[in-house]
Figure (cartoon, rainbow over the protein chains, first blue to last red):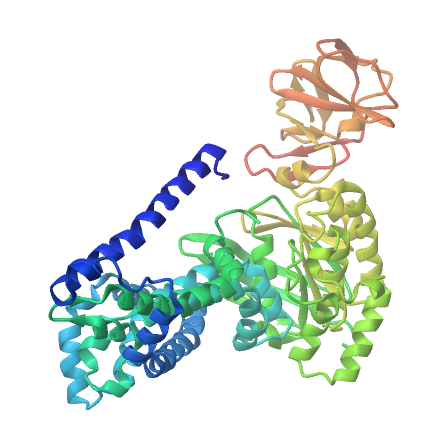
Length: 274
Length: 356
């Protein structure tokens, strides 16, 4: 569907209006908050978000170098584990008939429908008893578990959409189930797999609550937790938190941009008869 | 390469999908090196039978042997058969070369030998210039050749072909029909070819096996199936245009019976009905004892088919040489050539007499 000229003009007008309003609101908020401390003369002179210095100071103040490294480690581990587990699981559920396949799959799906917030307290005690709080495992294992539900569901849908003749042809050609998966199906499933990778990466990277509960040790904190650095009893340092939010969001945007084409293909897979 | 052609047998093979019986007690012997065509309408179980032989489905009951070895418990890769699929099933991410080589590589054939075999198969199928292309860069006919090449390159004990020509246009289909038949003769590999197209069945097979609703109705050479169909179903399925049927009433006249329906009357020594008549049994001169109304005209250039309604429930197709000029609704007189009618039992459908 192509947007008409009028729709496009309206879209741009709304975006332009908000672009003008947002920096103004930012300055106003900052000015109000700091007013008692700085006096009326300083009103409206907050450092604008667009200045590179704001990003640098936010980066340094929040210690984002280390936080980012933690986030990269956790996200990469979760993505790697999820991918390694969900591809074979989706393949089994999508292409094989075995006893109990349907009930097991529904148990898997339960992971997608149970609200994570309801599990976090028992999860905390379990990890504390196992001595895993304040370790990366406390972030990697629960998030991998959470992602497996979606990943298996997603990969199963992909494997079911692949013409069954492809796998059949490979089996008759002498390939084992494992070889059929890795040599025939995974290469054609790249868009679906990349889509799963991007989504899982995004969810893991942005995870806040789990990290807040499981991690108190500074050295294991992840980037989203760094945003709380700019929150104090008196309020929020909006330009710094905004700059930090941009920094925290940047890797997700970069990953999305790098994989955009495949990602969209994966999202649309099966929607149009090819 | 398999040293000598192997025989394939189905012995009382049954396949059930839940409450549905797709193949019901199939017993079929395919001789070594034979080109057997399994033909029948959609949903008759012919593809399921092929998949059972390939190992892509598990049999519910019965035995399948390839070269005397029972295979029903073996996975596809241990059966040493090659299969050509209706939609080709080429690996889209691989080049033609890799598609051809995949089966050999899966069997851990040394790389130099893989290359030699692939190049040989590519030359045979005129794919030499296409080895670096991906399937999406090929025409339908070229894809079909790659699918054939993938089967050929492995030198399997049997070729299994599942309606491999159904996605080709009419002209290419005729060419590929000849190509596959020639390839099979050259290699001498036992072949089971599944199709719903009776022209393919008649022109390609050493023998044809006609299936309906999971049951094998008749196995014989194409000309015998055509000349002596075992029952009404086979008679109606084989032959183009299809055999015309009409139900006749039998009246005893001494030791003979007169079978009739309106103007159609036939005197025979048996007492069963109905009679069926091949379309070209109508006499070309259009002079005869019977009369009917033309209700369809198909001019094909070299010949013309006229649909003639000749009585209640009686519709015959007459074949005329050349482009005959007849109008819809026209009344025609025609005769039935002696020795071209077949008689079948109305209850069981079994054949009672041929060439009446």
